[in-house]
Length: 143
Image (cartoon, rainbow, N blue to C red; front, side, top):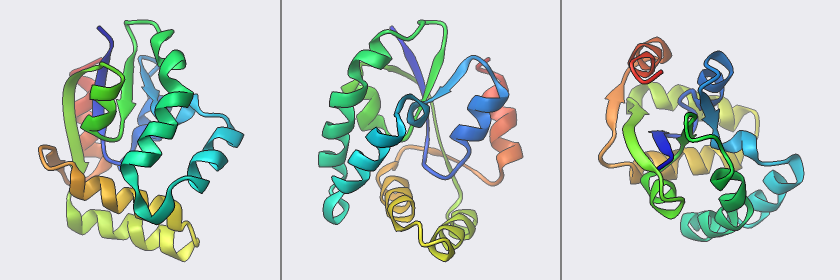
């Protein structure tokens, strides 16, 4: 069974996947056009509809991943949908998340701002960390 570590959006999945070869950021499996398509279908913050569209795009790509890799996903719903074993579930503290949200608003990145905030609230069972360096130390035990 393929494994996943859930890390809320904006909390370091991309950086971790670039640092550790064993980690794959789910967003890196999407082409530029697929990302644009999904952005257009994130209507009124409908996270479940967004996930359904994402699933149709990614299910075969994830199925074909090497089982030794760990997929970094955004939410437990993704893990369930892709039949991934959750080995960790983390999110940044709300105070520190505000800094990321403010940066995204300044850059007019409302899609990532909205999905970051929605996912953060939906990830109720996540263990909270306070900085990227804290998360990096936690992740090292999995690789």
